[in-house]
Image 1 (cartoon, rainbow, N blue to C red):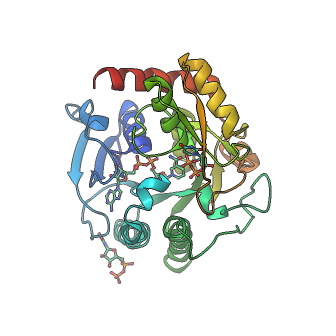
Image 2: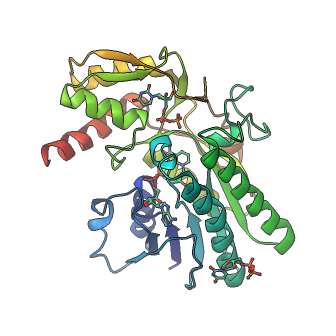
Length: 312
Ligand code: NAD
Ligand code: UDP
Ligand code: UDP
């Protein structure tokens, strides 16, 4: 049995990761300050003797004893990370230093959940791990993009300087149950709008693209990366199926049976035009690839939001 620390464990991805680790018998220490998450994400875990919750902000030092660390704490949607941009950078950078310091003291493996945002508005398509990215360092997304890049730098410097066991995954757009209904991300926005019969807000022309990975597939990839001894990363984790945002809106309307109209709104500054992971590395080294098509994953996500809205 391992004791595993999951920072950001009450969040959307973190709560699924905690659940999966406990299902295989790991003890989980979930650390979160509820900055962008809801308590409901973990209430069903709290009676399990394998689960322990600690309310803590990782920009402050943390002294605990564990065997493995997954570092997920960080606001992830543009609306959330732009709400307090300085805190976003602090969480990514100070948080990484503290969690790396903890891993160094304990001599344990630590996995960083990085992001496709390190590629910015990519000039290479699809994106491979060797691409250095195209990021505006002073724009409204920089507090997240640049801070996540700096966190990767810290992970690799601790790796080289202190000979630590690090793992870095670059996560592409992920969706599923327990996304926050008001986080402004495209999947949650469209489903909630469609279910409420409100207009579906399409930013720009809707021709920009994203690749959407169902959360269960992502968690499988994260654990596969943590549990192997060969690859340090960074490795892309995402679903290579690429869809325009207009296609997504149309699919959500179909799956919800909604008659919501689609309304066009201005494109936010520095919004990437397209994004699709090249997952050759994950396939070759982790023997991982997503298995859940967008239509199926969206149907499960719609069911979650239907229940959430019905509960008020
Ligand atoms: P989320 O907002 O649901 O979860 C993040 C969690 O971190 C929340 O529970 C929040 O309260 C917590 N948190 C934030 N700041 C904290 C701090 N200073 N101390 C302690 N806890 C803090 O987002 P998510 O989608 O689950 O994202 C999880 C991780 O995955 C993030 O690191 C994010 O950057 C990364 N990621 C997510 C996606 C995606 O599409 N969901 C894509 C790329 C990368
Ligand atoms: N740290 C922590 N928990 C620990 C060990 C370290 O939170 O168990 C934090 C501590 O705040 C420290 C940071 O991690 O400043 C970086 O640790 P490191 O050992 O790299 O550097 P230090 O600043 O201690 O020289
Ligand atoms: N988007 C949209 N309507 C919304 C929310 C988002 O058209 O209500 C677009 C957004 O402009 C972007 C894409 O959907 O092009 C994905 O946005 P999200 O915030 O989910 O993630 P990210 O931009 O970080 O990939």
